[in-house]
Image: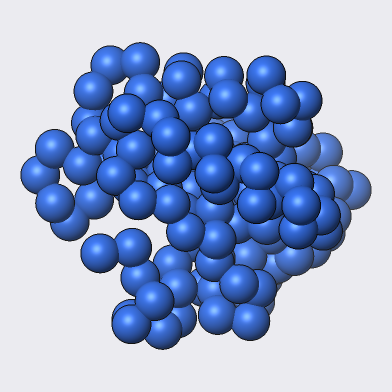
Length: 164
């Protein structure tokens, strides 16, 4: 089962390595990890996606809370989550007709063309994993040259259950 863990950590060198090391030592695979500054100076927010049962989740959360640089840890329940991911994708374009087809897909998925070259287009899109995967599947026949994904970021829909 997929779990989304939100962690507030001190913004210090080596914190991400210590958190990732905890998962490694426990034999848990991280499906996605994203880190960025939070609303509080000196504090970063990590979003980690892992698979495992409730026992695995409980064990990971207890171990995370023991790390010195960790301020707060929360599991965001699936029913209360807003998730997004950003993707940049470079796709092959060999004619005006293909370019037009791709632009139609971009509009349907509310994506954005961010760079155009003679034989490629680079597109930016954000959304949940399902939306991004659907978009990428429709672009595959055109010839995807490169994909860069950020990993999932998430927030609890309910402000009372945030990390503060």
